[in-house]
Length: 98
Image (cartoon, rainbow, N blue to C red):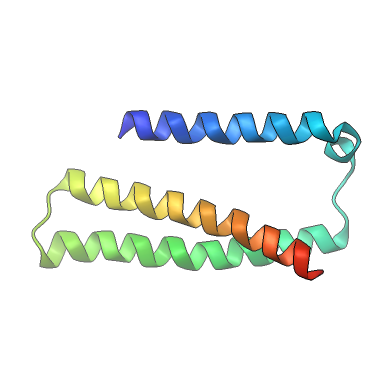
């Protein structure tokens, strides 16, 4: 699990560096109202995915008799899925012209 978390953090850091290097003037620009709205809506969608994933982890512990490590992996999976949904929602909202 530690390797998974470290890999996830490294991917996020590298992606941010690549994006900032490709368009440095955009990296320094403040967010406008549309970008803040897109960020808020994407986080809202990702929040629901995370909550459902955590509830699934807890229910697997209760109903299936899973151990603590299985629940921890389910919570980590919920976090990763929520971040993927967050990024995908931002892309969709930007492309749609939200």
